[in-house]
Length: 228
Image (cartoon, rainbow, N blue to C red; front, side, top):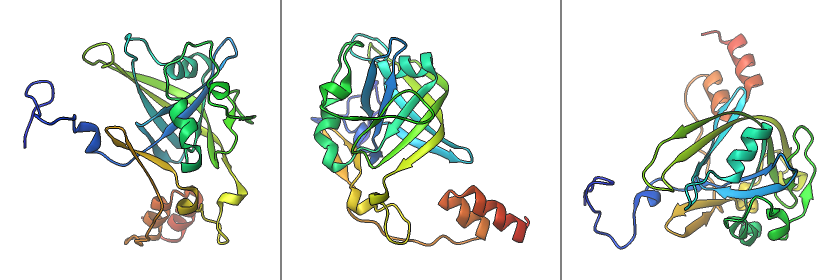
């Protein structure tokens, strides 16, 4: 099949676009408004961008009324947000926190979630989430779209602090992804979880391998041993 989005119909009963780029990590973003109200919402366009310094982004469409999401407004106004790992055990709370609610509603309370204090930023962390990033807002890139929900805010942040539950680590010091079962978005109304991983050792220099691991210290050490 072939179609041109917005120009020719795809002819399928469900739009296939979001199911072509999968799986996508869930950006479960907590923020705090200027008024002090905590907000929590999941975004299926989320990704890490680099490791030195560690940077992340989440992308938020406007709502059906053409309004910007509270997460974006709060992150810009306060300069802070937190990413919380969404897992299989937390799936119902993730889904509940995805609803459009007025800014004065605390989604932690609405979804029945306990809060953990952050160390570098004001927004709280999700208790029960095994990994959280405390982030400083860097910038927002606004992309135009079609219709009320078409406009996109792409929010970039720098990771200031990382929290990892000790119970989430294996004996050799790796995050136990198959046991944590992080959620990922597939498109339509479908999700998946990571229950299986496999290793594929990279080829190339020690610096390249360290870069793929995401370790600035190992990159520096490798370059000192093997200058380019």
